[in-house]
Structures are given as structure tokens and as C-alpha cells.
Length: 268
Image 1 (cartoon, rainbow, N blue to C red):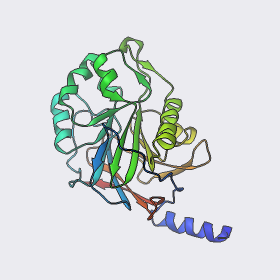
Image 2: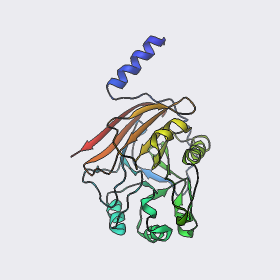
Image 3: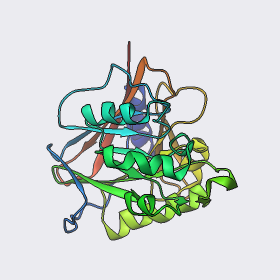
Image 4: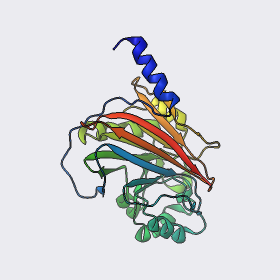
């Protein structure tokens, strides 16, 4: 295919909201305990995402068991247990641990763990609380049909008084993303970010989609950027507006290679 043809196809896809993504590693690794399994097919992945909820859940979340529901962090507020129970009810799959989850210290988040029915991820925080060391994992693998999705998360710098060691987020996320791509052969790697989301996208490696929060402003369409490897990475970002939920449809060919993305938002 000549350069003019490639440019035409890319411009056409961008104008219709469909974004080309590079082929992914498509071999299926062995299934291990602790993974998440969602019914679905091998041709389409529908992601819904929120961030900065701070204790209030929007009324726009989807129903159905073939959606991957993620939160980029800062979901807790003054109603910690009630918020967690509300998230359980709508079947969140994975949430990132941000600064808001630790506003009451490590013990405050640890006290919520018995009520949480979704996975907690964060790869740049090192906790001292034994419960958090055990329950907050650097990544989670989600199977939808035979599609294999790796999800990790990063949070911002915390006060020294928190007792949490904060590693550089880009380096931490890239290290985990390499494990997900190269050791676990994930078809897609997603980073839930509570840091500088743009920097995470352009300076990281092996990440396909950055879902951001913690920053002012909303991206009403995905940004397609180049990462540190010169590969395309998409950035989606929402804020604490409870009238809006972000979405991303990812499409695959028969060999589970990524062939397109359709970003979107649902608004009241």
C-alpha cells in the first residue's frame, strides 16, 4: 500500500471517530487464579470509564455483563462504604488507587477492603499496611472471550506522612506494561492514571490506552499520540462531572489484532 493510500485511510478513519491501532501480541497465555472473566467475543471490547467520583456515582453507567467497567481513581469520598457498595452493585471490574483513597491514611483504605468486590490496582505505590500490600495489585488481567486485557494504574505523589513510597509513575507503569505485553501476551494494555496523563501517554512504553483523571478538563474525543517507542497510544480523560461517562470501543480482526477504536461519551 503506497503512502498516499495509507494517509487517505488514516484520515478517513479519524474523521469518522475510528482510530487505527498497531497489531498486538495475540498468543494466549495460561489462565491463572485471580484473573477476571467477562462473557464476550473476540472481535469487540467495550470499555466504560469514570474518574474523580469522590463518593458520588453517576446514573449513566451501562448495564450488561459484556462491558469492562473501570475507574481511574479518586472514587471514595466521605461515604466510603456506601460508595464501594454502589460500585459493587453496578459491577465495576477494576479501580485505580489515587490520593483520595488514602485521605484517611492506609488504615482507612484497608478498612474498606472487606467490602470491595472489584480489583484495586496501583503500580507506583509501595504500602506498609499489610492488607494493602496484599490486596492492591500492580496489575489485573481481564479476559473477554479470548481477548486478554492488562490493566494497571498509577497515582500522584503523596505526603511523606502517608507512609507510602511513591515511585516515578511513568517508569513504574512502563515496567508493568512490559510484563503484561511480553510475559502475559496481553492483547491490550490499559493504564488508569491519576498523574499527568499526557506525559504518561507520550513518555511510556507498551501501553495502548491511557484512561486519565485527576486533572481539570475533559477530552471529548481521544487523543492519538506517539509514545516513547514511536507507537500509537490513545488518551481518554474524564473528570468528576456526574453527567458524563467515558467509553471506548476497541475492535479486533479474526486473529485478535487491534484494527480500530471508537471513543465516545455518554452525557445526560
